[in-house]
Image (cartoon, rainbow, N blue to C red; front, side, top):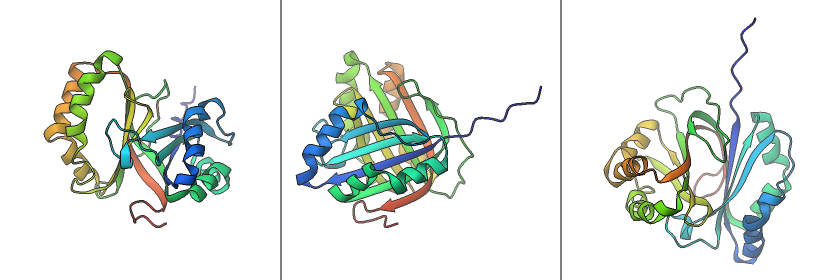
Length: 234
């Protein structure tokens, strides 16, 4: 029998928005109810509307203004069509003082998100930009221990050498958390991950089984469009 080709890796899309106060009620409704009425778009396999910590950070206090949308598409063409044609993307652009659109191709992936695992694509060149998404469902009994480690682990992320962008995201307060970061290259990302409080937090998470499910993905950025922190004009 002929060998079957490996599955094509999906294309991911992440929208980050800093919403104007007049549009906060709309964004809060999306955060609360979007799971029940996801948009229909060809090739869309997975979508999550995500809140954030205060000022886009990683703490327990929620942000009224910062929000994210993470999607998986079956291929690049479907992702590009969504960015170009989706009324949801247009609404976020209109409602936000800053809005960043990132199209991403997974290079390596471990774990799953709501049972969905990502097929990995080609490796990223050593000197090329790399993005990372870490997502975890925290066991309720482990939440106090997790949050004792989290602030110190995340405190220096946005200021780490080579970090271009970092934001805390989450599906639900306390128990379903994610971190997205964009780096100058893999060496800079690895240098941060393997030092200090972040390394201690990772070790504690695995030894003490903080998570009922987790996923870590490295992405190759395909396209970056918009504005975030006064940067990234596409």
